[in-house]
Structure formats: C-alpha cells, structure tokens
Image 1 (tube, one colour):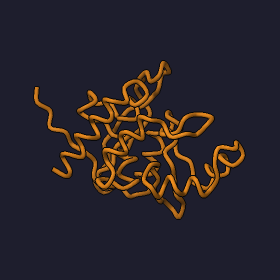
Image 2 (cartoon, helix red, strand yellow; image 1 turned 45 degrees about the horizontal axis):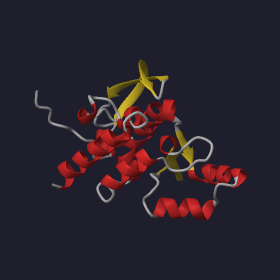
Image 3 (cartoon, one colour; image 1 turned 90 degrees about the vertical axis):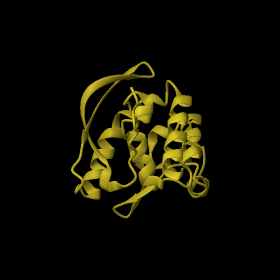
Image 4 (cartoon, one colour; image 1 turned 60 degrees about the vertical axis):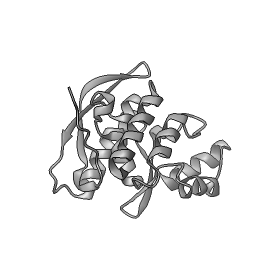
Length: 173
C-alpha cells in the first residue's frame, strides 16, 4: 500500500486535536486523538488545539517562564535560552505577544534539549518555522504509522528523524 504523506505547512492546515484515545509513550499511557480542523480555523483556535495536543507530553511554556526555571535550577539563564532559540536548536513560536516553547523537546528536571528533538529539528531547519515545527510534531504522520512525531520520539527517535528527513525532501525536493 503506497501512502502519499501530507505535511502541515501552515497554521491554516493545522489540526485541531482533542483528547480521546490512548497510546503508550515511554511506558506511560497518553491520551490523544486527532480531529481535523476547518481550514478557516483561526490561529487562536490552532494554538488551543496545539496546547491540547502537546499537554500529555509536557505542554507549552512561555519562554520567560522557562528562563526563570532555568535560573532557579542553575541550568542556564535568559541569554543561554535566547542563544538556543536564535540558533534554531530549540523550537519556539510567537502567539499573543508571547514566545512559547513545546516542552516535549526538553529533558525533565535538567531541561536539556533531548537528542531526538535535536535530530528532527536539524532535518527541518530552514524548511519550517517554529510554529510549523510545533504543528508538525503534533500532526499524525504516515511515516510513523499515522502517529504524531511527539508520540513516537521517546521510543524511536531515529524513526522521527527519518520522518523529518522525508518531510524536508517533500517540501524542498
């Protein structure tokens, strides 16, 4: 069976995601069901959908709040976080005059960038902006048996990197 992958390229095609079915990620049951949104969904609706989709995987965090946590834990500061964002290592996007970080890409307490996220983001550098990367990670992907990269990344980061490479090839040729 030949699947033609479809990748989300803008907020207009963002998926609205609502809670529903269960999946196991890293030995933990995660609840998540994709429900396609109307093409006329506003960015606000898409943000709420993205927030819901990523909640089981750490959710979203304001950049300023993350910087404060890094300082409190002695793992960095505002400048080191800004460098990671500007270099493209760390996914971030703007919504409602704040910058947001999808938390799934960070390791629990240390808040170090996980290698799986780093690999996939490296494949998609220059292809998607932070918003589109966040949507890509939350969108079911045919290269991952219709599971979203965020659902698979803990158990098979190489498969997610391969899916990112395929997305880059489809978009860039």
